[in-house]
Amino acid sequence: MRLIKAAVLGLALAAALVWQLTGQAPRPTLFEGARLITGEGKTPIENSAFLVEGNRFSKVGKRGEVRAPAGTARIDLHGKTVIPAMIDVHSHLGFLRQLDGSMAKANFNRENLIDHLQRYAYHGFAAAISMGTDMGELPYQLREEVIPGAALFRTVGRGLAWPGSGPFDPARNDVPYVVTTVEQARQAVRDLAPHHPDFVKIWVDDRNHTQKKMTPGLYGAAIDEAHKHNLRAVAHVYDLEDAKGLVRAGVEGFTHLVRDKDMDEEFMQLLKQHPGVFFTPNLGVTSRGLEAGRPKWLDDPLFHETIPPSETQRLEKQFVNRKPEALANTRASWDLQVRNLAKLRAAGVRIVFGSDSAGDPSRTIGWHAIWEVDAMSRAGMPPAEVLVAATRLAA
Image (cartoon, rainbow, N blue to C red; front, side, top):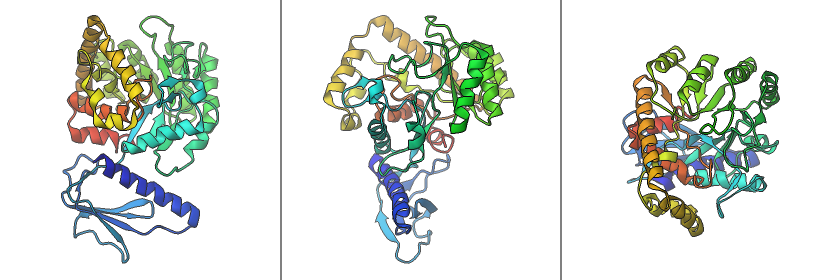
C-alpha cells in the first residue's frame, strides 16, 4: 500500500514539473482495480478507477464507469489499496540529520530540508507543516516550490515563546521570537504577517515547572495581533488551565492534547462555545514507549528501509535503559491522553493529524508520522476517522 501511495503522489508531482518545464500537459492516466479509500470517511470503493489529468485527480468511481479520453494510459492496481496522500500538520523540519541522528543549526539547509520532504513522500505524505522552528528566508522560498519526489513544504516561520520555554532541544531553543512584553508579542506577529505563515505558533509550557511561560496577557496580545492580520494562531500547551485561557483568547488550535490532568466540564463547555478549535494529538510520542524493554517497533521493516543501523542501536539504548518509574509515568500519560482524546471526539471537536516529527532525534522523519497513524487508531479512533484527520481535515 505504501509504495502505491508514493507512486501516485510521485506521478502528480512529476506531472506538475512537466507542465512547468514544457507548458504541455502530460498524458492522462487511468488507474484501475484498486480498493480506493477516499479520505472522506465513506465506504471504500472496491475495484475502483481514478483518472489523473495534468497534475490533478479529475475523476473517481468504479472500474468501467469512469470515462477516459482517447490515448489515456492505463495502470492496473488490482489487489492493491490506495488512500490519499496524507498531510502532517505538526513537524519540525531541517535540524535533524537523519543519517547520523545529529540535531544542529548547521543541518538547517536546503539539502537537508529536501531530504526530509523526500522521506515524507516515501511514506505517503503529500505535505508537512514545519511548526515554529524555521529560520531565515529559506523556508518561505522552499514553500513556493514543487520538488519531484518530495512532499510540499509549509511553514509557520518562527514561533513565539518565553525565553527557554519553546522547543526543548538546545539546537532550536533560541529560534522562536522572544516574548516577555506585550509589544514584543505584537511585533513578532507583525514581522511574520508579510510572509503569510500557515499559522502563528505560540508555546505556553513551563516545561515541568522548570521555566517561566507566556502569560495570558502575552499570548492574548499575540492572538489578537494575529487576527488583525487575518492569521490563525495555534498553541503548544500542556496544562489544562493554560488551554482554557488560550481558548478564551481566541486560539484556533492546539498542537498537543492537555497532558497534566483530565479535561473538565468547564473546558468542554468552552470548546462548545468555540466550535472551530482543533487538536493534533501527537500520541505516537507516548505510545512508542509503552513496552518494557526493547520496543517491537524497532523491528518494523518500514523503519529499517530509511533508518541506518547506527540510529536503531542508539534508539534501542534509549528505550531499553529506562527505569521502572519512567515506564509507569509513560503508561499513565498514555491513559490520560486516551481519555482526553475520547472526550474531544465525543464532543465533536475536530481532530487533525500531527505527529511532532523530529521534535527530538528519536522521532524519525517519515516513519514517526506513520507511527502516529497507528497510535491514533490504538487510542480508539476508527481507521476511517484517522484517515479523515490525516487528509481532508489536515488539508
